[in-house]
Every structure is written in C-alpha cells, then in structure tokens.
Length: 163
Image 1 (cartoon, rainbow, N blue to C red):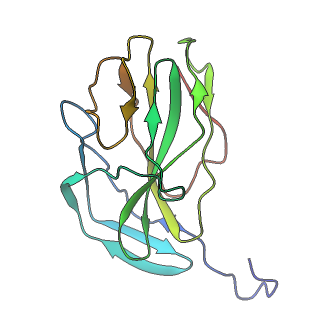
Image 2: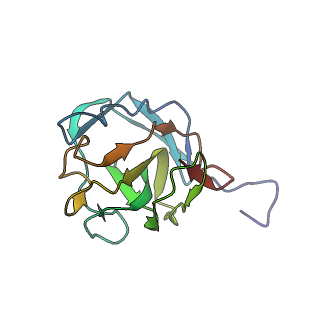
Image 3: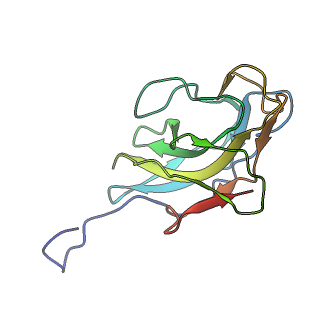
C-alpha cells in the first residue's frame, strides 16, 4: 500500500468466478471459465480452460506436491501475469480426525505476481497407498478425498478447517 493515500497501489483479485471444475474421477485434468484477474493493479483476462493439464509442481518451490496416508493440505490455484495457471501448496498437516471442522489446513504465502482464483483441500485418508502426487495421480485415487472447490475473489481472512 502506498503512503500516498490518494493513490492506492493495486492488489491481486479475481474479479469473476474462475468456476474451477473437473477435480474428480480417473483424471488429472481441470477446467475453468474465462478468468478476469487483477495482478498488482493491472487487469488481465485468462481464456477458459477445458480439460487442461493440472500443474505438477508448486509455483513457489518448483517441487512436486505430494501427500501420503493421514495427511491433508490446501492447494491454492492461481494465475500469474503471463496468464499461466499455477498451484501453490499449503503446509502438509496430519489428518486422522474426521470430526467436522476439526483439522486446520494452512494457506501458503503467495507471491505478489500470483492472483489466487480458487482453493481446494485434499486429504489422504488411512487407505491411501504410497504417495499421491498432485497433477500426476488421479483425483479419485484410493483414499484421496477432494473437498468442494472454493472459487475466490481474494484469499479468505480466516483459517480453513476441514472434516
């Protein structure tokens, strides 16, 4: 934010629903509607994606995003200034208690060149075998639960809890 309060410096906002879908079944793809975003104050439009290849590496770390049995994490979907859809994984947390709203998943720190458009919490239950890899393993792999996608205007201002 600018110290000159007459000229606020832009933030990052998704000004239309991304309508992120397709995170189900024996697939590794996703779809979105056209996405209007504001990144550092500049408005951009990302064309709709139908059956796009899901990113396989974290946009910040460059590492594969994985879960094993009894783990959960939030995955924040976004668009960069070049119009590339990217994903950033939050911290992996222990997931064994399935009481409604009992497990807090942590949102990741996001760079100022990334506009969040949606997030999804993914949980690897006790029956998950081996390592589940975001973007490479099927959405319906044994033991994997993909929560309902939350399409965003901006990041939530509170913690995210999952059952």
